[in-house]
Every structure is written in structure tokens, then in C-alpha cells.
Length: 208
Image 1 (cartoon, rainbow, N blue to C red):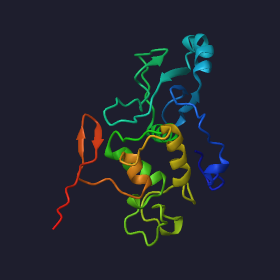
Image 2 (cartoon, helix red, strand yellow):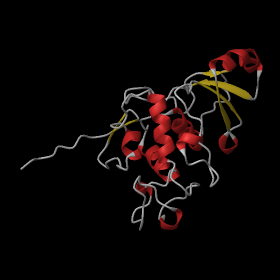
Image 3 (tube, rainbow, N blue to C red):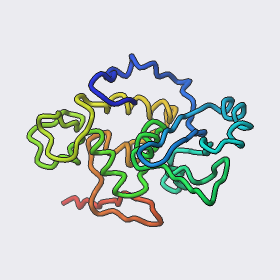
């Protein structure tokens, strides 16, 4: 998913297919706002490994998106790094985590801050209280935004839905955090945050 007004809005024209590779190997370089992150294939990781081990500027990370609430979070890319450099530790900046998790098909947020950051990036109604107008999928056009800025002038919800459906290979995801917000449903303010896991609370309806 790329930023800017010239990004493609039609999911069918992006070239997404059922052969989409899972995201497990990440190359990184730089630090902070100057961090560069590249997703590579297992073959590329294996071929580049001897060079990476000797490098002082490039790192290889193991990653997996959280597709279950009980999964460990790999978002900061610190779980396993080659080469390991305890004297010069590095973790993925917030903007890298957000975009990497969206591309990889992560379904659960680690905390409320990440949830709000995604809503702001995608220009969803949850990030723009009191907006005078929003589209049916929850996207708020630039002229009606009341909150933080977003680079998108058009909704990216359709392409994200297509991407997640392909990542999930037909498995349902509508009851997950991403499933909720991509269907225009904000996560309740009444949430439990346990060990860094943001969980949706069930609400009980009384039928009279």
C-alpha cells in the first residue's frame, strides 16, 4: 500500500492474487525516521544471509502478523535479529510498524495507540469526531476531517479488505480488531489491555 493521491484505488487492478506470499523476513537499515524496511522472500533471505551476517548497516528480522489475539507481537522487529547487536539495539519506529502490519494482514492491535494511529492513517470516522460527512465504509474525505492528517484523498478500505481476505485464505476475520474497523465499527472504549493485548469486550443485550 503506497501513499499519495496517485495510489491505485481499485483492488482488482493492483495485481493481488491468492499466491500472495506471507510476510516473515524483513531487511532493515538506518534508524528512527530514516529507517528503511524491505520485505523479502525466504529464498532471498537465505541467499543474502552470509552478507548480512558481516554487515554493519543491514539487519535481518523474523516477523509474523498477529492473526490471533493470543499470539506474540513481532511488530517491533526485535524478536530475532541478524546480526545481533546488544550494544546498538534497534526497534521499528511507529510508522514502520503501522504500515508493515497493514501490509502483512495483522488482525489485532497491540494497544490503543496503534488502533488510533491506523484509524488516523486510513482517515476513518473514529479519528475525526464530529465530521460532517463520511462514506459508507467509514472513510472521511479531506474537506470534512476534524482530526489528524492522512495522505489519502480516497478510501483504501476496499483494497485492505481484499488484501486481508487473500492473507487469510478464506478464513473469517470480521470479529477481529481489523475486521471491526474495516466494517465501520469503532472498538469500544471499554476494552481490557492485558499483557499488551487489546481485547474487544463482549456486550450483553437484554431482550424485553
